[in-house]
Amino acid sequence: MKFRRLNNYFEIGVHNGHVLFKIRSNFKIAVDPDFVFDFFRKAGKILMNPYNLFNRYFEKTSDDFFRQDAERVFANKNVQIALIDGLHQYDYALRDIENTLKYLSDDGVILVHDCNPLSHSASGTWQEWQASGEKGFWNGDVWKAIVHLRSTRKDINIFVLDCDHGLGVVTKGLTEKPLSYQREQIEKLTFAELEANREQLLNLKPVNYFYTYFLGK
Ligand SMILES: C[S@@+](CC[C@H](N)C(=O)[O-])C[C@H]1O[C@@H](n2cnc3c(N)ncnc32)[C@H](O)[C@@H]1O
Image (cartoon, rainbow, N blue to C red):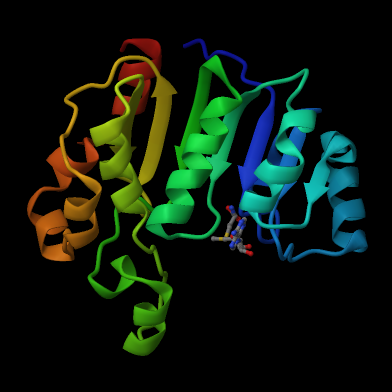
């Protein structure tokens, strides 16, 4: 089994660096307005994985990063693999994916977390989730960004792996089974409609489809 080596890593929404610090690459760009680690955690992570010495941290929103820094940061190196896990709202996730696509290499991959919410309250806005008083994980309506892109972008392909809380996979190339929703329709889509049409709306795939898609097996 042979994987392509995708080196240049970009993460939006890093939190405590749970994913970032494990990655072995000397080009890692981290964006979060509120990193949950200090100098000592960073130093410890450099000892555990020396690649972390080269990490570049941008403590700001992804919108500010794209407005102020992205052009310079990605001038000589494009993004080969990105994890989008910032603000879990339709418009934010959509902008994060579209902005990242501008800097993505032709064989690059964007992963998007929380695309397949399992409960009604986890799938709404942050305000709704807080008002629900439920415990657990808030996924937000990132799923609507997936429906939006599958309806509007014919130059990219998207599927969502049915694992964790739904891992979106975005690559360049022709769209499989495009959708034709307008923005106003997407805004009105309900969790009940998602429940009834997950496969169709998200292009939901079993986890091992990852190998079929990238390795042809
Ligand atoms: C679910 S956590 C990320 C978890 C992390 N990717 C991991 O795997 O451990 C979401 C993060 O998004 C950050 N965030 C919130 N709004 C953001 C924005 N506008 N731009 C970038 N990051 C944002 C939060 O500060 C938080 O740390």
